[in-house]
Amino acid sequence: MQRELTYEAVLSYPGHPSAEDVYRVISSRYSTISKATVYRNLNALYEEGKIGKVPPMIGYEAHYDHRTDHHCHAICTRCGKVVDVDVQYDSAMFTNAVSMEEGFMLDSHDLIFEGTCMECRNKEKEDGTEGI
Image (cartoon, rainbow, N blue to C red; front, side, top):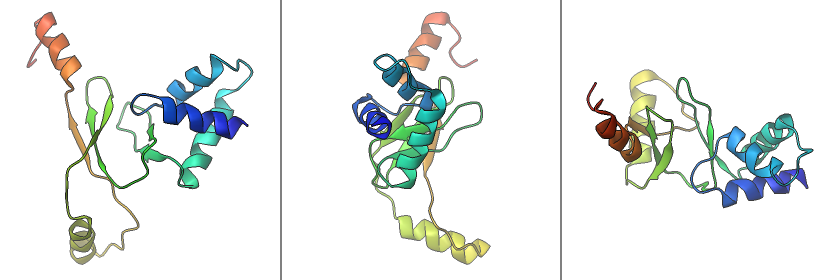
């Protein structure tokens, strides 16, 4: 039951929830669930291929994704917000280039863009800190 609750929380969350976000969603209805249980279930769901995982940036935690297809993400370096980016690129080209150039046999890769989201840019404009 707890794994199903965790899965439903990820599916219903708008965007890419962190483990803490998922915990807040579930604990608001089921106060007896522990953070450890949520973390364990998120990792199990990821390992089973039922949810995706966006690797954490330095200073931010990992985020989870209801999408399991291979796609790109953009991460705001100010607030940590994660969004899907549906850009077409040749995955095999990257894999082959790294294999040939560096001698790696890749199992997987993630393409992540970093920048500043619209909300943070607007806030900087309001605060007068834009470009600082």
